Image 1 (tube, rainbow, N blue to C red):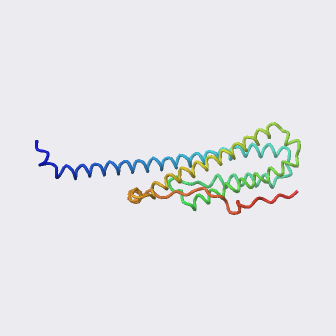
Image 2 (cartoon, rainbow, N blue to C red):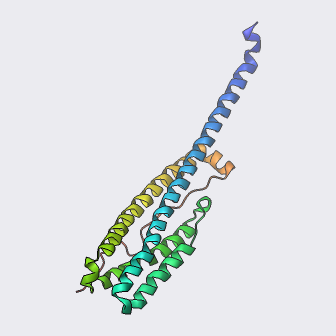
Image 3 (cartoon, rainbow, N blue to C red):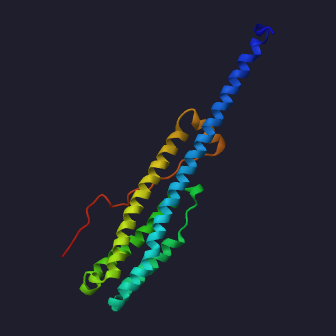
Length: 197
């Protein structure tokens, strides 16, 4: 077999095969990163759900000691309900949807903060073993939420970097890979809270 005779078409075919293999690898890499972002989003939702699941027990425990603080207790339950009703599709993580989700979760954090202020008025409640355990679980959950949000932002950053880098941005545009939103600090978070006694 004369290789020189077939050389003019072997080189272009080899180049096409290499380009196709690279494109398949690039596409599969973007899919893997996208799935990573969705997995990290699921972790965020899981931690927020864990917090939401703790709230009824916490409210019930506090209610036994502070029944006349019903307005605050109701605000916690209402904030939990509102936050639970906000759903974000991991396929559609737009900045607007993420901000809506974050705002709902901030309402829960704020209501829980008011609840903890009330707890300070009731020394018997602060000494209650059930309350102490729930409070500890809630603190642990808040830490897990922070870690899950940080991990989500890192996965989103890695994904966004790949789909925006040349030449993969061409394939990303062709196949509909879009930039993912990040969790951001709330407005005013840069200022220290004002504490009055």
